[in-house]
Image (cartoon, rainbow, N blue to C red; front, side, top):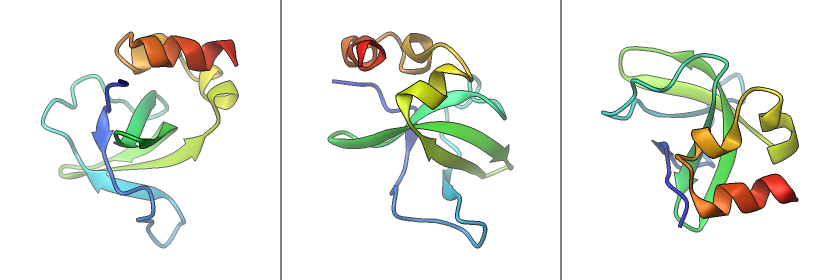
Length: 89
């Protein structure tokens, strides 16, 4: 199972068509321009973080190919086996 970095409803968007979610308690590894995994088990996406506020994180969903341009996907997904499989596709 992949580790979700940002618990999010991937259908929720703001006026700029970006996804948004509450800032997770363990958000120290999240940074603007960084790659993360957002969503819920069974329905998740690679994302690039665009903005972090005191209580929220704003991001856009990207393909694994685009995510690799922003960082290491195995690290973004906390080294999960599924993340490594995604890199191969």
